[in-house]
Length: 466
Ligand code: ADP
Ligand code: MG
Image (cartoon, rainbow, N blue to C red; front, side):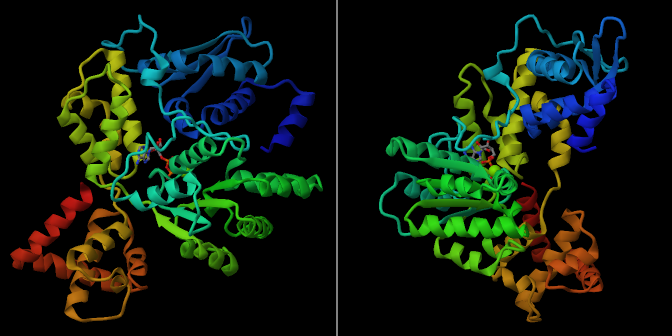
């Protein structure tokens, strides 16, 4: 149902409990951020609204979650309900009747928000609003991100620049947004009064379209062009949207010519952005393109230590830190989420954080993250290991020194990902699925017959699953 239909309906008939609940969920998703919503609120169900008192009863799948929601989201819930269902009573959150008993959790002391808050995403909604905690100081540098970090730092310090724009790219949850906000803070600090604008590309699109509707693109453009530093995040969302792209290009062009600094991020490299015009691409490649890679173990370990520095009251033994760094490898966001969860559980249950406790607290997450290896990672690892170029994974060359690693990579793709055989074939230079089957069989045979190859494969699996 679109927002408009909803309004038309509510104008004539009073909202039902169900329609109010839908509206409340939408509001919460926006006000708390998608991540918090998914983590804590999505599983709530509406049990009913009392016809006399107007009290709203919500049920959570566990006592823990019910209490957590009461402690952390009561105000937001109440506010959203009051708007969606004027005249409603209290908002009660209970555990579902069949939920496991609470046993060890105690709620005598109020939970201190700062200590154990779930990761709340404050989407920078308005213009240049930057999140305080995303600074260079709180950013841990390692091999995976040092190029991006140094570029970001150089640009933000504001000396003479050899490059503009800066294009940051890398998978989700690896620190691109953090770096962009850090640049904004740093730039402002060094250039008091400078105009820094941070926006997601969705916001860019949205504002641009709104300006077009209002027949006032002039002030929108003027505002952006007045920026000394313009940071546009997640530009992959603009791809394919012609008029927005066009406007984006003009703005970018003018900013660069006027010597303003421009930073763009995306979840992939400029060349891989489909639907982005080639002239935009070539403009992007005038600047510096820096990738943010998946963090290695050492970086993950250091990030955890850094986060724990902010929690001096909590003691987390080293084996737990090692365990977390080892097992939560797909993104820093995931790593942070897991750490937050462990701290929250420990706080609520008043249990010390040891390995067993950690595994228990993260059971679901660990299961889910176990096998999230990508074909790209596999190809990269295998090519690193055999010292061949990654382009050989898709090439037609049949020489043994590239054909064997290619087969190993296909084998690993089959074993470690959920991808189908045709999909795997496509990712290896558009090969047929029968070629993949052949590779898998061949490597299986060789593993049984050739101890050295088997050791290689084992090592690769260990690295990929680390
Ligand atoms: P992206 O924009 O690449 O998807 P984010 O910048 O939102 O990722 O990062 C996700 C979370 O991980 C943020 O909370 C961020 O602070 C944290 N993070 C990522 N990289 C680092 C790092 N190198 N040091 C400290 N925190 C990091
Ligand atoms: Mg981001």
